Image (tube, rainbow, N blue to C red; front, top):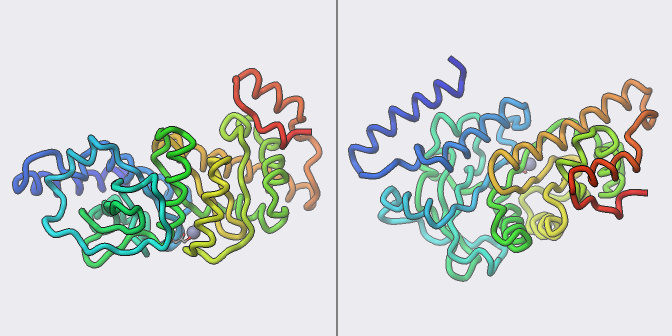
Length: 300
Ligand code: 2HA
Ligand code: ZN
Protein backbone atom coordinates (compact mmCIF):
# COMPACT_ATOMS: atom_id res chain seq x y z
CA UNK A 1 0.00 0.00 0.00
CA UNK A 2 1.42 3.38 -1.00
CA UNK A 3 1.92 6.26 1.37
CA UNK A 4 -1.11 8.09 0.09
CA UNK A 5 -3.38 5.04 0.38
CA UNK A 6 -2.45 4.51 4.01
CA UNK A 7 -2.83 8.22 4.68
CA UNK A 8 -6.32 8.02 3.20
CA UNK A 9 -7.13 5.07 5.45
CA UNK A 10 -6.08 7.06 8.52
CA UNK A 11 -8.25 9.90 7.28
CA UNK A 12 -11.26 7.65 6.73
CA UNK A 13 -10.99 6.28 10.28
CA UNK A 14 -10.80 9.73 11.79
CA UNK A 15 -13.72 10.82 9.73
CA UNK A 16 -16.08 8.10 10.85
CA UNK A 17 -15.35 9.11 14.44
CA UNK A 18 -16.02 12.75 13.61
CA UNK A 19 -19.25 11.89 11.84
CA UNK A 20 -20.62 10.38 15.02
CA UNK A 21 -20.32 13.75 16.73
CA UNK A 22 -21.63 16.09 14.03
CA UNK A 23 -23.83 15.31 11.03
CA UNK A 24 -22.69 16.06 7.49
CA UNK A 25 -19.69 15.10 5.40
CA UNK A 26 -16.54 15.86 7.40
CA UNK A 27 -14.24 18.53 5.97
CA UNK A 28 -11.51 15.94 5.31
CA UNK A 29 -13.95 13.88 3.23
CA UNK A 30 -15.11 16.71 0.99
CA UNK A 31 -13.82 16.70 -2.58
CA UNK A 32 -12.01 20.05 -2.33
CA UNK A 33 -10.08 18.96 0.78
CA UNK A 34 -9.19 15.61 -0.78
CA UNK A 35 -7.81 17.50 -3.78
CA UNK A 36 -5.94 19.88 -1.49
CA UNK A 37 -4.34 17.04 0.48
CA UNK A 38 -3.49 15.13 -2.67
CA UNK A 39 -1.67 18.09 -4.21
CA UNK A 40 0.47 18.49 -1.07
CA UNK A 41 1.38 14.84 -1.26
CA UNK A 42 2.06 14.87 -5.00
CA UNK A 43 4.31 17.93 -4.60
CA UNK A 44 6.19 16.21 -1.78
CA UNK A 45 6.73 13.16 -4.01
CA UNK A 46 8.20 15.43 -6.71
CA UNK A 47 10.85 16.62 -4.25
CA UNK A 48 9.59 20.19 -4.35
CA UNK A 49 9.02 20.60 -0.60
CA UNK A 50 12.22 20.03 1.34
CA UNK A 51 11.70 20.69 5.04
CA UNK A 52 8.74 23.11 5.29
CA UNK A 53 9.22 24.52 1.79
CA UNK A 54 6.19 25.50 -0.25
CA UNK A 55 2.55 26.18 0.55
CA UNK A 56 -0.96 25.90 -0.88
CA UNK A 57 -4.16 27.93 -0.65
CA UNK A 58 -7.62 27.35 -2.14
CA UNK A 59 -10.51 29.83 -2.37
CA UNK A 60 -13.62 27.88 -1.42
CA UNK A 61 -16.95 28.07 -3.25
CA UNK A 62 -20.03 29.26 -1.30
CA UNK A 63 -21.40 25.67 -1.52
CA UNK A 64 -18.23 24.26 0.02
CA UNK A 65 -18.37 26.83 2.80
CA UNK A 66 -22.01 25.88 3.55
CA UNK A 67 -21.24 22.18 3.67
CA UNK A 68 -18.31 22.77 6.05
CA UNK A 69 -20.08 25.15 8.43
CA UNK A 70 -21.31 22.49 10.87
CA UNK A 71 -17.64 21.57 11.44
CA UNK A 72 -16.41 25.13 12.01
CA UNK A 73 -15.25 26.11 15.51
CA UNK A 74 -17.96 27.50 17.77
CA UNK A 75 -15.40 30.11 18.79
CA UNK A 76 -13.11 31.03 15.85
CA UNK A 77 -9.69 32.54 16.56
CA UNK A 78 -9.47 36.31 16.91
CA UNK A 79 -8.86 38.38 13.75
CA UNK A 80 -5.22 38.72 12.67
CA UNK A 81 -4.10 41.50 10.31
CA UNK A 82 -2.77 40.29 6.94
CA UNK A 83 -0.52 43.28 6.28
CA UNK A 84 -2.12 43.56 2.84
CA UNK A 85 -5.70 44.28 1.72
CA UNK A 86 -7.99 43.19 -1.16
CA UNK A 87 -11.55 44.38 -1.76
CA UNK A 88 -12.11 41.40 -4.07
CA UNK A 89 -11.62 38.92 -1.22
CA UNK A 90 -13.84 40.41 1.49
CA UNK A 91 -15.69 37.60 3.30
CA UNK A 92 -14.02 34.77 1.34
CA UNK A 93 -12.95 31.46 2.93
CA UNK A 94 -9.60 29.82 2.14
CA UNK A 95 -8.20 26.38 2.79
CA UNK A 96 -4.54 26.97 3.69
CA UNK A 97 -1.45 25.01 4.67
CA UNK A 98 0.01 25.95 8.04
CA UNK A 99 3.13 28.01 8.65
CA UNK A 100 6.09 25.67 9.21
CA UNK A 101 4.11 22.69 7.91
CA UNK A 102 6.05 19.94 6.18
CA UNK A 103 3.73 19.22 3.25
CA UNK A 104 4.10 15.43 3.54
CA UNK A 105 2.34 15.64 6.91
CA UNK A 106 -0.83 17.26 5.53
CA UNK A 107 -2.33 13.95 4.37
CA UNK A 108 -1.75 12.28 7.74
CA UNK A 109 -3.12 15.10 9.87
CA UNK A 110 -5.07 17.63 7.79
CA UNK A 111 -6.71 19.49 10.69
CA UNK A 112 -3.30 20.15 12.28
CA UNK A 113 -1.20 20.94 9.19
CA UNK A 114 -3.91 22.75 7.25
CA UNK A 115 -6.99 24.76 8.07
CA UNK A 116 -9.75 27.05 6.86
CA UNK A 117 -9.59 30.80 7.42
CA UNK A 118 -12.30 33.40 6.94
CA UNK A 119 -11.43 36.88 5.63
CA UNK A 120 -13.08 39.84 7.37
CA UNK A 121 -15.44 42.30 5.71
CA UNK A 122 -12.62 44.83 5.27
CA UNK A 123 -10.53 42.29 3.32
CA UNK A 124 -7.48 42.81 5.51
CA UNK A 125 -7.53 40.16 8.27
CA UNK A 126 -8.12 36.42 8.76
CA UNK A 127 -9.39 34.17 11.52
CA UNK A 128 -9.25 30.39 11.82
CA UNK A 129 -12.62 28.65 11.59
CA UNK A 130 -11.41 25.05 11.15
CA UNK A 131 -8.17 23.08 11.61
CA UNK A 132 -4.66 24.46 12.31
CA UNK A 133 -4.96 22.69 15.66
CA UNK A 134 -2.23 23.10 18.24
CA UNK A 135 -1.61 26.81 17.66
CA UNK A 136 -1.09 26.70 13.90
CA UNK A 137 -1.40 29.78 11.68
CA UNK A 138 -1.63 30.14 7.88
CA UNK A 139 1.53 29.84 5.75
CA UNK A 140 4.12 32.63 6.01
CA UNK A 141 3.44 33.28 2.31
CA UNK A 142 -0.28 33.93 2.91
CA UNK A 143 0.09 37.65 2.02
CA UNK A 144 1.52 36.65 -1.39
CA UNK A 145 -1.13 33.99 -1.91
CA UNK A 146 -3.86 36.40 -0.86
CA UNK A 147 -2.92 39.17 -3.29
CA UNK A 148 -2.42 36.62 -6.09
CA UNK A 149 -5.92 35.25 -5.42
CA UNK A 150 -7.33 38.78 -5.62
CA UNK A 151 -5.73 39.45 -9.00
CA UNK A 152 -6.44 36.02 -10.49
CA UNK A 153 -10.08 36.16 -9.30
CA UNK A 154 -10.46 39.51 -11.06
CA UNK A 155 -8.73 38.64 -14.35
CA UNK A 156 -10.44 35.24 -14.68
CA UNK A 157 -13.92 36.37 -13.54
CA UNK A 158 -13.70 34.13 -10.52
CA UNK A 159 -12.50 31.00 -12.34
CA UNK A 160 -9.09 30.75 -10.64
CA UNK A 161 -9.25 29.30 -7.11
CA UNK A 162 -5.85 27.75 -6.42
CA UNK A 163 -2.47 29.34 -5.62
CA UNK A 164 0.50 27.01 -5.11
CA UNK A 165 4.09 27.76 -4.18
CA UNK A 166 6.91 25.18 -4.48
CA UNK A 167 10.70 24.94 -4.68
CA UNK A 168 11.37 22.91 -7.86
CA UNK A 169 15.08 22.40 -8.52
CA UNK A 170 15.57 23.08 -12.23
CA UNK A 171 13.69 26.38 -12.44
CA UNK A 172 15.71 27.50 -9.41
CA UNK A 173 18.93 26.53 -11.18
CA UNK A 174 17.86 28.50 -14.27
CA UNK A 175 17.63 31.67 -12.18
CA UNK A 176 21.29 31.27 -11.15
CA UNK A 177 22.31 31.45 -14.80
CA UNK A 178 19.64 33.48 -16.63
CA UNK A 179 18.78 37.13 -15.87
CA UNK A 180 15.59 37.85 -13.90
CA UNK A 181 13.83 38.74 -17.16
CA UNK A 182 10.45 37.23 -18.09
CA UNK A 183 11.17 37.25 -21.83
CA UNK A 184 14.56 35.54 -21.52
CA UNK A 185 13.34 32.86 -19.10
CA UNK A 186 10.09 32.21 -20.99
CA UNK A 187 11.96 31.78 -24.29
CA UNK A 188 14.40 29.31 -22.72
CA UNK A 189 11.43 27.26 -21.44
CA UNK A 190 9.26 27.47 -24.57
CA UNK A 191 12.21 26.46 -26.78
CA UNK A 192 13.11 23.45 -24.62
CA UNK A 193 9.76 21.65 -24.44
CA UNK A 194 7.02 21.51 -27.09
CA UNK A 195 4.36 21.38 -24.38
CA UNK A 196 5.71 24.63 -22.88
CA UNK A 197 3.77 27.16 -24.95
CA UNK A 198 0.63 25.01 -24.59
CA UNK A 199 0.89 24.94 -20.78
CA UNK A 200 1.85 28.60 -20.34
CA UNK A 201 1.05 30.59 -23.52
CA UNK A 202 1.35 33.90 -21.65
CA UNK A 203 4.86 32.93 -20.54
CA UNK A 204 6.19 33.10 -17.00
CA UNK A 205 6.84 36.18 -14.91
CA UNK A 206 10.19 36.48 -13.12
CA UNK A 207 11.02 38.44 -9.98
CA UNK A 208 14.49 39.14 -8.63
CA UNK A 209 15.37 37.75 -5.19
CA UNK A 210 13.26 39.20 -2.37
CA UNK A 211 12.73 38.41 1.31
CA UNK A 212 10.34 35.41 1.63
CA UNK A 213 6.99 36.18 3.25
CA UNK A 214 7.43 39.96 2.78
CA UNK A 215 4.65 42.25 1.64
CA UNK A 216 7.05 43.59 -1.06
CA UNK A 217 7.24 40.07 -2.52
CA UNK A 218 3.45 39.75 -2.19
CA UNK A 219 2.81 43.04 -4.03
CA UNK A 220 5.33 42.32 -6.79
CA UNK A 221 4.05 38.77 -7.34
CA UNK A 222 0.44 39.85 -7.57
CA UNK A 223 1.31 42.54 -10.14
CA UNK A 224 2.91 39.83 -12.31
CA UNK A 225 -0.13 37.57 -11.81
CA UNK A 226 -2.19 40.09 -13.79
CA UNK A 227 -0.39 38.73 -16.87
CA UNK A 228 1.09 35.35 -15.91
CA UNK A 229 -0.33 32.27 -14.15
CA UNK A 230 3.22 31.31 -13.17
CA UNK A 231 5.73 33.63 -11.51
CA UNK A 232 9.33 32.58 -10.86
CA UNK A 233 11.00 33.83 -7.68
CA UNK A 234 14.72 33.95 -8.43
CA UNK A 235 16.91 31.70 -6.24
CA UNK A 236 13.73 30.57 -4.44
CA UNK A 237 10.93 28.86 -6.36
CA UNK A 238 7.75 29.26 -8.31
CA UNK A 239 4.21 30.53 -7.66
CA UNK A 240 1.40 29.11 -9.81
CA UNK A 241 -2.32 29.87 -10.03
CA UNK A 242 -5.15 27.94 -11.65
CA UNK A 243 -8.80 26.98 -11.75
CA UNK A 244 -8.37 23.70 -9.90
CA UNK A 245 -5.73 21.51 -8.25
CA UNK A 246 -4.91 19.51 -11.40
CA UNK A 247 -4.48 22.58 -13.59
CA UNK A 248 -2.28 24.33 -11.04
CA UNK A 249 -0.14 21.30 -10.27
CA UNK A 250 0.16 20.55 -14.00
CA UNK A 251 1.37 24.09 -14.64
CA UNK A 252 4.04 23.76 -11.94
CA UNK A 253 5.12 20.46 -13.48
CA UNK A 254 5.24 21.81 -17.03
CA UNK A 255 7.40 24.81 -16.06
CA UNK A 256 9.73 22.57 -14.08
CA UNK A 257 9.93 19.93 -16.85
CA UNK A 258 10.89 22.57 -19.44
CA UNK A 259 13.46 24.01 -17.02
CA UNK A 260 14.85 20.55 -16.33
CA UNK A 261 15.30 19.81 -20.05
CA UNK A 262 16.98 23.19 -20.54
CA UNK A 263 19.35 22.70 -17.58
CA UNK A 264 20.34 19.20 -18.73
CA UNK A 265 20.92 20.35 -22.31
CA UNK A 266 23.10 23.26 -21.14
CA UNK A 267 25.04 20.95 -18.83
CA UNK A 268 25.72 18.47 -21.66
CA UNK A 269 26.86 21.31 -23.89
CA UNK A 270 29.43 22.57 -21.40
CA UNK A 271 27.21 25.37 -20.15
CA UNK A 272 26.43 27.11 -23.43
CA UNK A 273 23.00 27.75 -24.99
CA UNK A 274 21.63 24.51 -26.54
CA UNK A 275 21.85 24.38 -30.35
CA UNK A 276 18.74 22.48 -31.45
CA UNK A 277 15.87 24.35 -29.83
CA UNK A 278 12.28 24.89 -31.05
CA UNK A 279 12.11 27.85 -33.46
CA UNK A 280 9.95 30.92 -32.95
CA UNK A 281 7.95 29.81 -35.99
CA UNK A 282 7.41 26.42 -34.36
CA UNK A 283 6.13 28.02 -31.17
CA UNK A 284 3.82 30.31 -33.18
CA UNK A 285 2.50 27.38 -35.22
CA UNK A 286 1.84 25.32 -32.07
CA UNK A 287 -0.06 28.22 -30.50
CA UNK A 288 -2.10 28.65 -33.70
CA UNK A 289 -2.87 24.92 -33.93
CA UNK A 290 -4.13 24.89 -30.35
CA UNK A 291 -5.81 28.33 -30.64
CA UNK A 292 -3.78 29.67 -27.70
CA UNK A 293 -3.24 33.38 -27.03
CA UNK A 294 0.56 33.25 -27.17
CA UNK A 295 2.41 36.26 -25.76
CA UNK A 296 3.72 37.72 -29.05
CA UNK A 297 6.03 40.10 -27.21
CA UNK A 298 8.14 37.10 -26.25
CA UNK A 299 8.60 35.88 -29.85
CA UNK A 300 11.02 37.24 -32.48
O1 2HA B 1 6.86 27.77 3.52
O2 2HA B 1 8.34 28.23 1.03
O3 2HA B 1 8.67 30.81 0.87
C1 2HA B 1 8.18 28.13 3.36
C2 2HA B 1 8.38 28.83 2.09
C3 2HA B 1 8.58 30.27 2.13
ZN1 ZN C 1 9.28 29.27 -0.60
